[in-house]
Picture 1 (cartoon, rainbow, N blue to C red):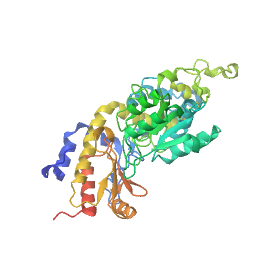
Picture 2 (cartoon, rainbow, N blue to C red):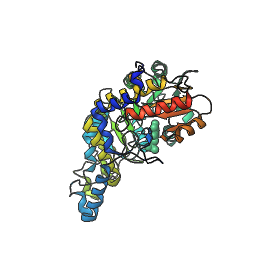
Picture 3 (cartoon, rainbow, N blue to C red):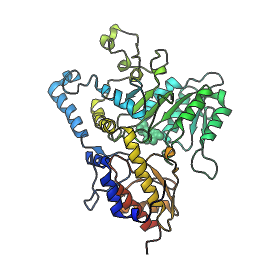
Picture 4 (cartoon, rainbow, N blue to C red):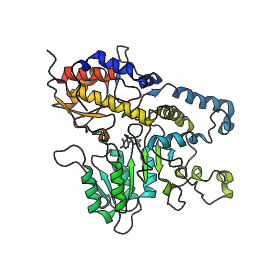
Length: 431
Ligand SMILES: *Cc1c(COP(=O)(O)O)cnc(C)c1O
């Protein structure tokens, strides 16, 4: 990323960048919360909870109206019947993460999906029973792996191996991950990592890790909570075995939204893979045979991991979300995202006398929209100052402020305002 010159750092240039980009109009699809002064807040928290797509309201109302008008017949009738509702996401969900039709299903929530997928893709056998994960990892992933391993009658201390940044470094080196996989090759059953680190914003080299894992004979899966809707994923071509993500961060599909799960078709079409089952994963042709059919016949795609009749109301906002993502396409969004985050970084790094630094890697293929900023001195106090200025962002102890300009609803002007504020509060004020 090249530094901006003096002229292109002014406010008029930021506004001009917004005006020149046709994707700037996507912002109008969203409800932006207002601050105390009635103006829209500087919302940089899409990495935690995405904003509401306006059209989500219509999709939710449609479900309520159909339920009121039709009762049980809403399953089969109306403009969006409930029985095939999950099929709305079959193609759009697959395109979002670079998968084929039948490799993605939207269901449950993220940690639940991780457990369901580990049931299938963590198959300890003999000496091969370790799980390799990254550090620092998101707490839910740690609890998930520890409890999962215990539930299988194994000791997490024996099973879970971590690879983290080297002393004095903040991000992971792909070579260290690959070396760990190679040196413990015949002990590793499953590699499971966050594809985009929640804390540092670093994107891992998923294709290289997958290849190394497969060479060692392990299954490889990724938690894509911070990656889905943020960066370009090619899960099928990368041969990733399994993945899961939530939909309330970059996907803007409502608090605690219905999550995603991906299983590569070579596994998804295999009826013999062990999985926890329920009637919604059964072949639809015999699903309603009820007690007459007591053998589970898995649908021959990832939908066989569905267990229950899904919560339609909760799925309604996800329709709004995936319509928006699919309408623009990840390629165009990512292109805008790189420009937006690159602009913010350049603005932040050129504030004179700055007393903060960005720990997120700079290379295009190593970051998404988030920049993780470490402010010198008392980080809690610094974050309070940032919030007082009308910025919605988040803080992860001990000292990381996460700022995520999303390409869907953030503007270059938002980034300009934030950089000026940082320069003002944590730099030498301009003479
Ligand atoms: C946000 C996030 C979660 C949250 O899990 P839920 O089951 O959706 O509550 C888990 N893991 C990672 C890496 C996350 O970023």
